[in-house]
Amino acid sequence: MRIARRAERIEPFYVMEVAKAASQMAREVARSDRPMVFLNIGEPDFTAPPLVQEAAQRAIRAGATQYTHATGLDKLRERISGWYHQRFGLDVPPSRIVVTAGASAALQLACLALIEAGDQVLMPDPSYPCNRHFVSAAEGEAVLVPTTAAERFQLSAAAVEANWNEHTRGVLLASPSNPTGTSIERDELRRIHDVVRSRGGITLVDEIYLGLSYEERFGHSALALGEDVVSVNSFSKYFNMTGWRLGWLVAPQELVPVLERLAQNLFICPSTVAQHAALACFEPDSIAEYERRRAEFKARRDWFIPALDDLGLTVPVVPDGAFYAWADCSAWCRALGVSGSWDLAFRIMERAHVAVTPGRDFGSAGTQRFIRFSTASSMEHLQEAAQRLREMAP
Image (cartoon, rainbow, N blue to C red; front, side, top):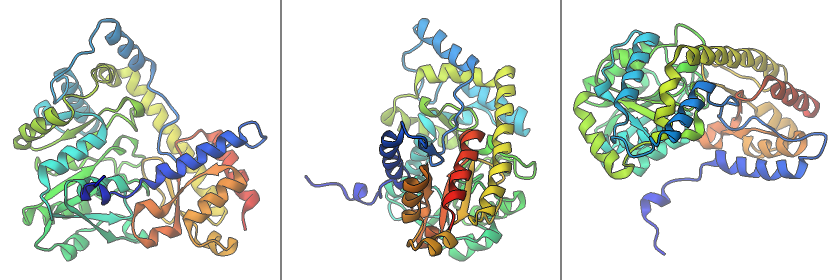
């Protein structure tokens, strides 16, 4: 069978390949005194809070399970708009909000609407692998621009200007970022957008971890820069609804009919039950619970990052958001005689029964120096993992 070239260009999602191996080993050691501790997947250990679950149950009992508009329930778009006003002081009209089947669908729609074959999109190296694959699936080319710890592993305006050419369509940023948990400084983000805008390009920003920002200087949305910014967000991370597959996109008003037309054909609509459930995310009791959980994620970060540094798994930039630790493991690789983070991840899995994610997925060869830990697991699990790593430390 002949496979389309666009499909051949998409590399495996190695995060999930490692997860499969970890799950297999977990079954083998489940009854041992050291069951697997999972610090590899970026999924909150919290589930949707009670009001959200009850709203889903009410929708099912009431038979509210049929198609909605492709852009989502009007009431949900209004609630999201209200959240931007309450949380960020931004006036984002509901008409600019498109509810989607997860942030993945939002990114796919944005790329299909804005990227032509051969267009280049600048992205930081390292960055979340699926983002560059969305560009590739739209027959564009993701151009990974090397970044440093001094740059918080984010693009700068100077780097965007230096790498812009006649084929460049725009930038795809993430703030806070997966895998580093770092955000872009407000003024630098404005400078980046000024460069892109001056060249008639697009600024597309993945903001799915924005609700999980821990420092006031970074807890801002790129939407404050103007109505020409395209922002992707999600109910998965801050709102703890990963498997519900619900997200949204904020776009310029003139782009919304295009996104709607694409969504009608590709997805029909997001999950109706998930949309009715998500209405309850914005209730005061739910927000209070989400804020309590955000404080817990911050406490985990504050404990785990120093623990990694003490073990020689140095985190060069303390994450200001999300729930990741991007740790330099080169000293461990040298001491244990392994070639990079891929082999080290499997060594840790086999010896310590701790699942982590190697840097292979997140960019060029330089990311092989790094391992990503997810601090979305409980404090108890983080402490157990740190103890096991201490025992096998070279």
